[in-house]
Length: 404
Ligand SMILES: NC(=O)c1ccc[n+]([C@@H]2O[C@H](COP(=O)([O-])OP(=O)(O)OC[C@H]3O[C@@H](n4cnc5c(N)ncnc54)[C@H](O)[C@@H]3O)[C@@H](O)[C@H]2O)c1
Image (cartoon, rainbow, N blue to C red; front, side, top):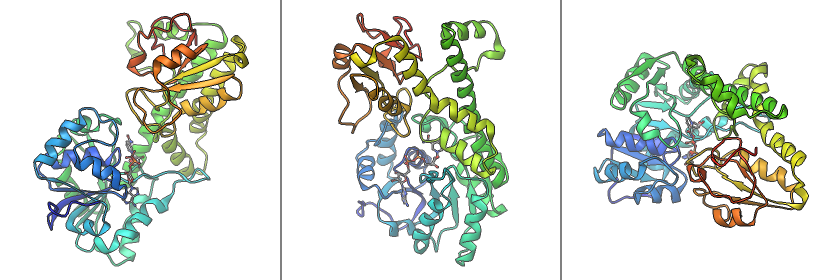
């Protein structure tokens, strides 16, 4: 998929993985700042959607920004790797998953760059924006040096919240690091146009900083989830405890509520840190045990209180967090799997998720279920009329009470 009629021979930036959750908003912002920006992605369908002015996923007010960027004549798309050669700066936003041993897949970055080497001959900067294990930026520079490439590498991690990237990337501080002063200077030229606040670090510091941000959030959620389980086992209302803890008490203002902690980043990045510390990150592993164990806790709790084998259970929300259509690493699916072992039937619904053939309309799930479980606190469930059907609601989103 490409748009050869409008694709110029030279562009300022090519965003590789530019149709993804990080890449597409970033490319839109860069184009809106007047930088001619090419989105390159192997997903031709997502490129087609972007070129038609539609984000392939939920991005807050994204389509309006995208349409404006396309209309400005600064945004282009292609799934032909040869087109990457048109760019002076190449910005990498591909996924960086862990492998079957839960170690970072270093090859994710090198394989991508290796495949693009013929198109990087005239580039003057490679910016790594994906979240990577400590040492990756230096290794990438060494890899390029070994290929005889004279291409400075910068690491400028994405730290915005998914779904609000266009807004946040222009307000939040941007960490800038690079393997040389030249890399830092060139990256500065780009990001100074995006956000007023730049924070300078060494590449390894920046790699740790990004991972620490995510692991810390993951651990904070785990603390709340562990407290929730204790309170629930003691027969106490956790929401009332948290509300009491926070009332007029600023030190607890940032304390998160309990709920499924999932998605493509927090667990994966905690695993990256654990691997980089020789699996000596006990706190991170404890957080994983708590967060990943919460669906099983919920199911066991429900089994104690309801004759599940005689009941149809409806799960409300399959996305990994509220207001998104993203099901990557969503714990709703772990809950569904575990409930299926015990309930007579399990039905699922979500107002945003597409592509899951088992999803049913909300009202149908409510009408057919003997018990409802809120797995994702979508705003659509606030004030939901569930009649006499009991609701297990860790999040406290359905205001009729907390059965969970
Ligand atoms: N999702 C977030 O909110 C978020 C926030 C901060 C950081 N990150 C990090 O950013 C990176 C990307 O995450 P994401 O959520 O955008 O992933 P994503 O899967 O939504 O996007 C990655 C994109 O890269 C494309 N791609 C994969 N391999 C490619 C290749 N070799 N050449 C061209 N395109 C290729 C995919 O088709 C996809 O469109 C990860 O390292 C992630 O940890 C994500």
